[in-house]
Amino acid sequence: MNKVLLVDDEAYILDLLGKLVPWEFYGFQIVGKAESASEAMQIFYSTQPDLIITDICMENISGIEFITRIRMQNPVVKIIILSAYDKFEYAQKALKLNVDGYLLKPINREELINTLLDVQKDLQSGENYQVQLNELQSSLNYFQRKYYEEQLLKLYRGEMETLPEGLCDEAYWCILSVLAIVRNEIVFLQQDIEKNHDVTSYSLFVGDGLLAVFLCAEQKEKLEECLRKIEQKYAREGTLLCGRSQTGRKNQAELCEESRSALNRLFYSADGCFARYTAHDRPQAGAVASGISREQFFVWIAGRNFRECRSFFEKWFAACTAAQEKRETVIKAMKQYLAWIKETVNKDAVPGCEALLLQCEKLYRLKDAKLVMEAGICLLEEANVSGGKVRLLMERANEYIRKNCCRETFSIEELAEHLSISKSYLSKIYKEETGESVWNFVMRVRITKAKELLVSTDATNFAIAKAIGYTSEYHFSRAFSKMVGVSPSAYKKMYLK
Image (tube, rainbow, N blue to C red; front, side, top):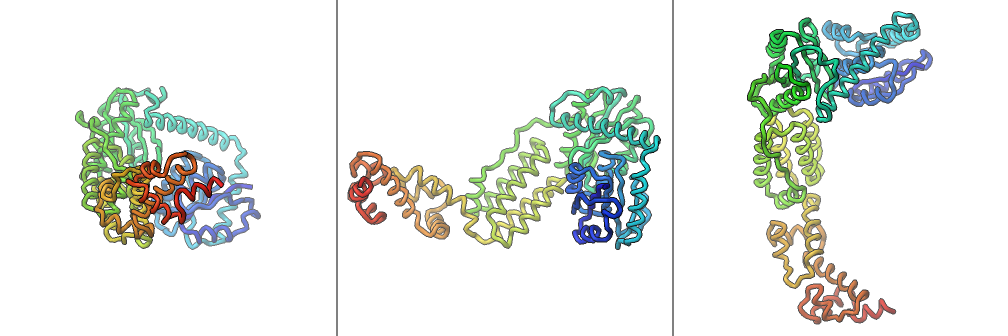
């Protein structure tokens, strides 16, 4: 049985494909269905299908880019494209990617079966020498690319100093780190680079939407000319973010770091999608941007202190800019802050928080990141002050009470000052959240401690009263009897008995 992977961002299309033809009758077995390209890549790695049937228009990662990635991993896998468009440009792109079929939606059952029969014939006739030779060459290319990609990933992580010797034959090098905003532009960029026969190039995918392009040439002028053409064509707002390294004979590790740093700087620039390397474009030294603890963030929210929230984010973004903090680090921190916001808002505002979290993946400018965080604060302002919003504040209050309430000097004012909120606001939200007053919880903690001391020590009632924060044995005994129902001495006798 030949294994089949079905990919379409509409679930009903996947169900329709599964039922449209008797797959096993034609020698195929469906091993996976995916509603996105990223999910399909995971299934592809685990099942290694012989045939992929995929939609050409999908969100986040398009069908074209998905097929390009598949071809880099397995050049001989059979691919059939589904499309709702009959335009020539889509078919032309499909031909360039060497697909085995192009079917229009709505899917015609007879056309699908005929295409499957052709694919089956190709799969069965792969025994001739020429096909085997092509597959062998493709496999060698695949393993070579895979090796380069592993080396590149190590390079980005700083785990190695140079790339393999096979990449160092030419005199002059430049490395481009490309982040695709419009996904299909990656394919066109690669095609344009390959047209320049004076420049040798290696293109490697590193993560979702990130492409590393290694350019080398014997003459520096030829390499610079190629870079100018790329800049002129692709330095357009909203297509590609492209950070380049210096053109020179440095080791690839250093050039790679320059390239990544240039790409990272574009996150902070007001405009421009192609970072031209100059001498002053080296990474700036600066303090790492400081974050904020979850505890402090919840205190601000509980106190509805949104002015303090905005002030923090303004300073935090400024610190990130000054330090040229990595884009992925900023996005990761933003996701954490938005997740905290999601924890505190009421149910009606949760979908808004989830939408903001999804937007984080598509942030390529700092100004857009600021707008997302401002939208998160606005959600907090509009949301109800619910119990969930002050949950952490109550946890902090209870923790402080357990650690400090056995001191004679302990007071509600002290607790409110520790939490940076007023005494009246603390009393109000504590009652709403727990159903009891702050002082009642203090008494329960003290009496619990007194029970432990009564049964585990021979201390007098006066000594125990002092140990749990009471100034006199009388007040202690009165509070104990009210809470437990018997006096401290009677409780001890009952326990011993």
